[in-house]
Image 1 (cartoon, rainbow, N blue to C red):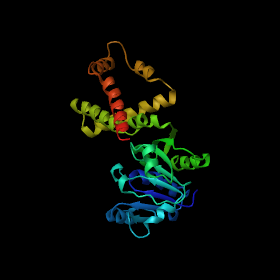
Image 2 (cartoon, one colour):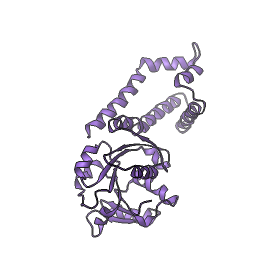
Image 3 (tube, one colour):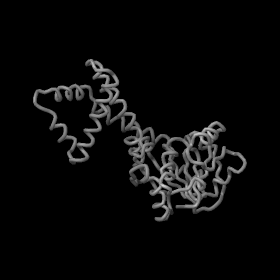
Image 4 (cartoon, helix red, strand yellow):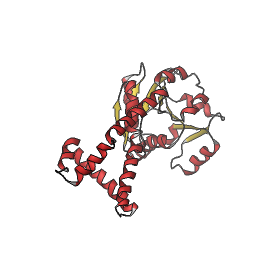
Length: 268
């Protein structure tokens, strides 16, 4: 892999991307240079992170070395973007942004001396089960694309999109886990209402969802086919589905996805 990688902002998502590369010895800790905003973050990483990486507080002595790195991961909070000042180095260097809602156009204006890549990923990447969408800026070589994909493939499944589709990808995959968590919570509350203990009810819901997803993936059933398999005339399932249709659950979920996508576009 490349000789040096910079990580600007070293939160949970950045750690989830970089750490598997260390674990599999695809990257050496001495070749990674991290920049964090506060002294507290710096001390916490030095004390608790299991690898001895090069780490600097923003604007401290020696921190400008990050601009010598061939690839830079931008992983700060969007509101911190204005505080980052690019140092002109080599125009063939890559900047990979995982900031939600920050467009390639905005990145190119902010970092004119870099070739920019926009990435959207989701929270399951922290356990190696992520989904990552990539949109490429202009003039990025195929070898550079392959290198970036190798960085993410250790912790997520990769999809390549034109940038216009990243907003809907974000709403489905990045906002989606919160929607699924809400559904799990609501279903388990239903079990609680029927007399089950809360913890047991939630465990049953999670295992039911995992089993249902595995069934769909392993048998290639469509969702309609699966629904018909467990729905009998006048039975309990059709009674439950009727309530959900009457309460417009399907429409609410569709509108939730569309709303998240529209909100992402507003951040551009």
